[in-house]
Image 1 (cartoon, rainbow, N blue to C red):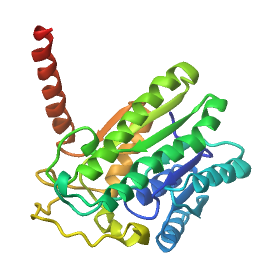
Image 2: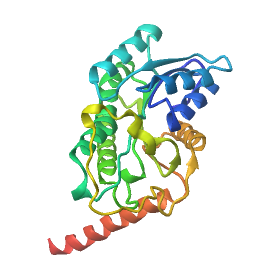
Image 3: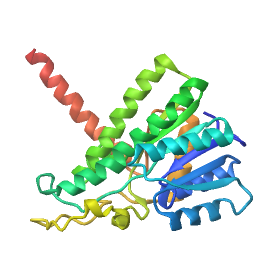
Length: 276
């Protein structure tokens, strides 16, 4: 998809990090951008920064965990502009690091609702309009942890991102038949300098937890990979959208990590085949 002046884009998780940088990048290209986030003060900052050069940017407080709110967002966008060209389901959170068997249930539920159901809600609310138009593009933000292994203590986060990868693969499979003109991208960035580690600030009270970890986990999310800036990640995403690729790993060493996982899968397939 070629990003052009006058197109309409919707970006969730736009209050900070990659979302904020992407809103600015799209606005700089002349797109009309609807920025959505659950955190109003941060969202207002995004809108102010991105519209500073005269771009048309508006903000909408939306909790992506709630389908009705995402559906209302889609209806408002369609009522205002008559169409939508680009939808970026980007909102995401990460919780405390813990071994898989020690992770608190409340962490699993909160992270899954935001990272997976938030993306699914965006697909349900917006994709029917793209299918009807026969054009447009959907970006679902996953992570390197959706396509590769990185450190320990991230199972809750990684499982939600694997779900995003699977959802988008099936979406692509179905669109190939129903609406091949609608593009899809699975955005899989490695470590990015954002506030995601501070996501607890937006955790609903119903998912509060006082659980204590039984053993310490290496606190480094980045592990052996360097971080890139949110602006760089957004620029890579813009280029990936225009390139038309489905899988978009971004960041130094990310593709190599994905290849390690793919090689293990292929090796096990080669081992199993002779047994059969």
